[in-house]
Amino acid sequence: MEFKNSQKLYNKGLVNLVGAVNSPVRAFASVGGNPLFIKKAKGSKITDVDGNSYVDLVLSYGPMILGHRHKKVQKAITKALKNGYSFGASTKNEIKLAKIVCDAFPGMDKVRFVNSGTEAVLSGIRLARAFTGKDKIIKFSGCYHGHQDALLVAAGSGLATLSLPGSKGVPEGAVKNTLIANYNDLDSVKAHFEEHDDIAGVILEPVAGNMGVVTPQNNFLKELKAYLESKGALLIVDEVMTGFRSKFGGAQELFDVEADITCLGKVIGGGFPVGAYGASNEIMEMVAPLGGMYQAGTLSGNPIAMAGGIATLTELKRQNPYERFNEVAQIIEVFLLESAKKYGVEITVNRFGSMINPFFTNVTVTNFEEAQTSDTKKFATFFWSMMHNGVFLPPSQFEAWFLSSALSEKDIEKIAKAIDKSMEAVSK
Ligand code: PLP
Image (cartoon, rainbow, N blue to C red):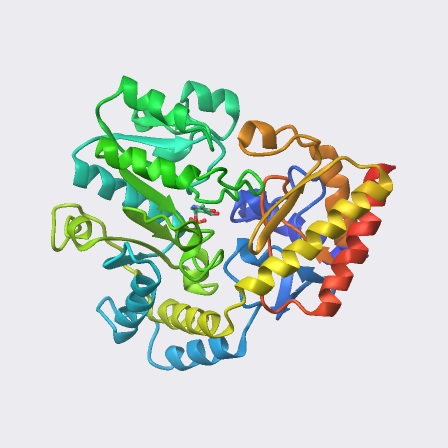
């Protein structure tokens, strides 16, 4: 497999783009080598500029749940394009997508569309503060909520514990109201409430997908919600990754937990830039123009993005692929475990619905600290071998692999063969 054209574009891109990428997760920093440049994608496959074709388990980091260029989505956006691209005024499709989203999440009476997951979360946090009149927010170490200043902490455990900014350029003042707790550890949340009486709420990924896949253990979500209720604090559930992916009603439907504020992104735009935050009428009436919490956006509710979102969610509801996702993830888990055993490689596999990934460790992974025991050098070897065997994975140990409903039996066989070869490569 050759990457000559990607290499050429990478060198060209370095001149006017930072690292030749527009999001650092696309750089191959932790696996070595240079980022891939993509030419096109269709269904379960993605093709790079050298003509190499891969089964895509990145799926644009989640949105492309139906696979690429699904014909119903393509038709809907082509139709929308004919009417114009952006109006700065409301359209019927905003109401339609809002209804689909609110019907899927029982705790949501109203929703506000924004342009990304980052915007959804930063607005959701502002809303929690506006509603409670309190400033502090608890987040969990290893959970990613976009690149807003206040939540760019706990990128690494040392920084996390000290509640120091995880990124240069984030002033201490911006994170002074951010408290860090450990995922799956309610006592670490309680400890903050014992110390502070101005906590507005807790934000979390209901299934974490940004430290690899880490699932909530032993009723963690329900117990957290009950505890927060007793304290008059809000549960802000970041379903940017899990919304419409874990289940149509997100992880909240699966775990039977209702968020006070829900943040969405990725799948709801079907590959176009959309985010959303929503809550009960009582909470959402804080938002301008009904209330005093300001939040706005020139391109929010963009007509092409709305059309893409409606077509994606409508098709997703029709397909109802969630059982199948579980089955396929289980099949991949078995491939991983069996070939690891065959070649004597220690791994732990975590999965949840259509999200899965192996950690190269013998430790059970339930939080960020445990996730970090994974041998990232082994992951890098595994990653490159998977690429050479035709499977595109996120170039990081700490990103989930995503499944699409476009995966065929043939694709699954290809994944199995690639895993076997790659585990062998890791064992050498
Ligand atoms: N929240 C979660 C859970 C995410 O996984 C992400 C992105 O990966 C975000 C928020 C930020 O979304 P975006 O990249 O669309 O700004």
